[in-house]
Every structure is written in C-alpha cells, then in structure tokens.
Length: 532
View (cartoon, rainbow, N blue to C red):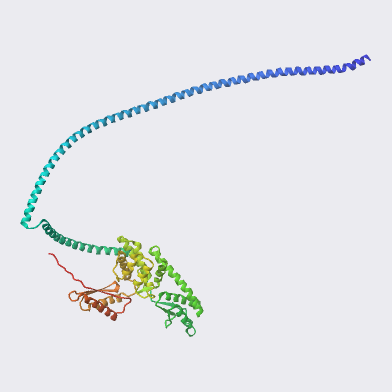
C-alpha cells in the first residue's frame, strides 16, 4: 500500500522534473544560441568593418589620385592662361607702340602743315596787297578809258550826225538782214536733207511693218449660192402657188433667184447679214426636206439667233486678236457685223483687223501708242456695219458711233480723216490712213483685176488732163482720189472750183466705179533759182 502511494505520488514529480529539465535545456539552448549569434554577429561585423576599411582605403587612394590629376590640370590651365595673357599683353603693348608712333607722325605732319599754312598766309597777304594795288590802278585806267570813250562818242555823234540809239538801230538792222539770209539758207538746206531722210526712213518703216504682218487674202462675193441635192428641190422651195418662196423672202428680206442654174439657188440682198440668215435657213430646209410656211418661220427665227451669236463671237475674236483692251459691247457687235460686209470684194472685218495690225506695227516703229493705233485701225471702217441702214457716208457714221461710245480723240480723228475728208490732227490718224491704203492696195487684197484697176486709173488721169488749164494729174488712193495740178498762169483761184466740178461731172458721165472719187485741184506758185 505504501509502495502504491509512493508510486502514485512519484509519477507527477517525475514528469515535473522532466518538464523542468526541458525548460532548463531550452533556456540553456537559448543562452548558448544567443552567445553563438553574438559571436557570429561579431564575426560578420568584423568582416564588414574590414571590407569598409578596404573601401575607404581605396576611396582615399582614388581621391588622392584625382586630386593630383586635378592639381595637374589646374597647373596646365594656369600655365595656358598665363601664356595667353602674356601674348595678349605683348600684342597690346605692340599696338600701343604703333599708336604712339602714328601719333608722333601725325604731330610731325601737323607741325609741317602749320608751318606751310603760315607761309601761305604770308604769301596770300602779299598777293592781296598787290591785287589791291592793281585794282586801284585798273580803276584809275577805267576812269580814263570811260572819259576817252565819252570824248570819242561825242566826236562820232558830231561827225555822223547820229545819236547812239540811231546808230545802234542801223547796225542791228544790217545784222538782222545778214542773219535772216543765212538762216533762210540754212533752213532750206536742212529741209532738203530732212526730206531725203524722211523718204528713206518712211520707206524702211513701211517695209518693216509690212514684213512683220502678213495677212491672208480673202475674197468675198456680193451674192450667196445654196447648192441643191436634186433639181426637183426647186419646186418644193417655190411651193404651191409660190407660198414657200414668198414666205422665205418676206421673213429674210432677201430675193431668191431660181433660174436655169442646175441644182443651185442664188440669194441676192443688199444686207449681208440678212443674206447670211437666208442662206443658213435655206440650207437647213433643204437638208431637212420639210418646207412649208410654219417650218420656214421656225427655221428663220432660229438662224437669226445663230447669226446674231456668230456676229458677237466674231466681234469678240477680232477685239482679242487686235489686243485693244476693253470696248463697248455694242461696238463689239458692230465689229462682228463687218464680217458679212465687203468692199471691192474684200472682207471688211479682215481688212479692219489687218489695218489695225499694220497701224500698230507702224506706231511701235516710231514710238507712238501701239494700242491706240490698233484700236483706231480696227474701228476706222465701223460705219460700214450700218451704212446701208443709216443715211450718210461710212466716215460720218463711224465718227458719230465713236463719239457716242466715248472713244479716244485719236480714234475719232483717225476715222474722220482716213479718206482725207478732213485733215488729220494726230500722228495716229496718219498711221491709220497709211495702214488702210496698204491693206487695200496690196496685190490680191481686192477682187478687182489688175487690168481693170489700171484702166480706171488711166481713165481718171485722161479725163483730168483733157480739161483746159490742167498741167498734170495723178490718180491716188487706189483710184478713190484724183489730184489735179493746174497751170497758175492760165488758171486763177476761182477757176479751180469750176475745173473741179467739170472733172467731177466728166467722171460721173464716163466711168462706172464703186464708192466715191474725190477730185482735188491744186494751184500753186513756185519760185526756183539756182546759185552758181
């Protein structure tokens, strides 16, 4: 029992002892681990310290090395700067020395100049004194001369019985007579030279202008012809009881001539625009085949609009080619109408455009306004666009149109004087007249044959020469004017009027000609003498 109790008591104690031993072991282990950790830490710290000391030593060595290198570089830079400073100082010292030398030289120069000026001043003073002395002497001599001249003048007046003003007048009259003779001789010689030079230069300028512009030759007819596909088409054009042809003639104002000409209809009308409308209308009707009054009226109205548009386009094209700038729209339309107008078989629009280009070339050669010259040349025959509608010559109509649309005065002058109805007032007008004559008279420009042209000129001159008192006559301006020179001993000024009228009546009775012919009778007296 006792043993059992002891056993029951000894078991917890044993466990407690074991637990106590375990706790003691753990504590001892912790103490030992702590000391081991401290030992290890000390060892690691020592190693780290050793490495840090090595790094510090290396850094100190590197710093010392860089310090030495920096000191070396600083010493080199200081030496370089010192060298530059020494060189700069040396250069500045040299410059200062040069400046000192120059200043010394200038001082020497100024000293020499000052000495020279002093000498000159002394010389000038001496010369001034001499001049004053001579001036006094001259004044004394001048007084003596004036006194002598007065005495001589008084003696001359007493001898000649003339005053000073009368003698002066006589001398001036003689000098004037001598000079007037010399001046007249000089003027005559220069006029002869100028006349020869002007002729030569004018020929060169005209030739050059013609070479620079070579226009095409275009011949037009005064009637229009429409070809027919078959001969039976004439009957359809005439229509039942002639109603188709009457409708077409009444709407267009053109006569249709349906004669024996095979497969053709001739259109005859005074107005070229109406004739063009009739031609286009008839061509459309013939090509379409439907010919009756309603259709004719429709086609004629359409063609009238087309022709009006074509007129506007032709006018704008001509203005563009001439290069004359802005122009009134109504004048553009009138210029386009010239395309359907002919003069001696020459298309008036092409003639006007050619005249404009030639006048422009002539103006450029002599330094005149080329644009104004071309403008005047293009508009010089503008009156022909409506001369069959308005009473009067195409010149008068053209002048009125130019004034109405505020054209420049040079253009108006050129229109008025291009047929010499009035005297030209500007150089542009003369150039346009020359260009007009060149365009009209050049070979092939007009349909009139050379033989008929020559015969008409000969007839004009023959009629004029047969009149009593006529010395000679010349047909000019392509037969549009006759210049008649009469003998001044046989014909007086009043008789020239009757001679002009007589020649005019003879021309009207004996010749047939287009347009008008101007008769100019000239009576002059010339005095000619030859110095030998």
